[in-house]
Image (cartoon, rainbow, N blue to C red; front, side, top):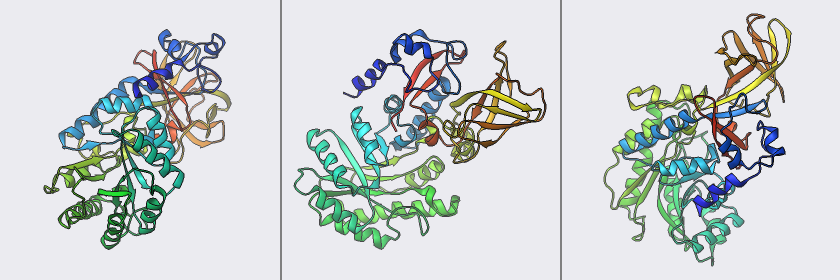
Length: 426
């Protein structure tokens, strides 16, 4: 089912829904698959600016990097799908050994199921009655489907139990240990976690299978505080196991953490988790790695601390075009807040391409200083740095808010050939 659904994406018509794609493709009634087969050049094949691209080589490199890292450290891997919401990339992640895909909200899980994802880890407490009815129906209809979600409150457990009553399905849950006062979700103390586990034990519709959390939410996170939090998390798993809180029919105990900033700490602490009464699923959930970025995660990736372990490469590039050059120190390109991720910093000018001769040069002396809805304001050191019509490539921070702005993204090979298109569903 999943492979067929992914393949059918190639049958979509190329039309006005997809920014930056060649207008003549719509006039010729081409499908995505037919446009892909033409292997057009990004710069001469009719693409319009602005256009977001993904680097084919960087994508392949990043997929391999985390697969290798997880395998080396004995970790299972459920990358957070909210980053890209792209079934084609999910398939590649699963082919690279991912256990399943992580979701944050029910809509994401529904997209995953539409494309055949068989294991979903929902990193949130799910108390929406309609969504729980949908989960129960999916579990009842497909015995091979595995679904796990957070619980972090007694009231939440009761609401879930009420919604699931009589639905003929048991939902697996993990108790979320919060990262501290002032952090995001999660039961704040071990006593709170015990109370939640007790409530699950009294439920006829829920089954406790482990513990989980998110270490990047530790207030003032640093190596010491993140390590301390992760040890609390693994300690809770050991305690729950010794206390017999996991039912006899639980085949493996789930211990899960790991964003894109501290997966090295997760690997270190999870490696020290003692043997439990049954196999342990040490589940990492990093998602931003698939595309990486040019700012936020470039600074935060654990590979900076451990370069011997590998590294990631920014895969995004937003090609814009200079549409106004009103002064020697000011220029405007035709992409703004509607096209650019800006919640974790302004984009960086990476390259300039002359549209007349195709020559590319570093964007030296060019800075993005402000964004409007449809323009980026550029500051230049010299009147010679840019000309009207020049293509300017921007690098951006935060993959999650880059992907969401582009429903169909060209994947570009080293020679400029567009060899694929990635469809997103936000």
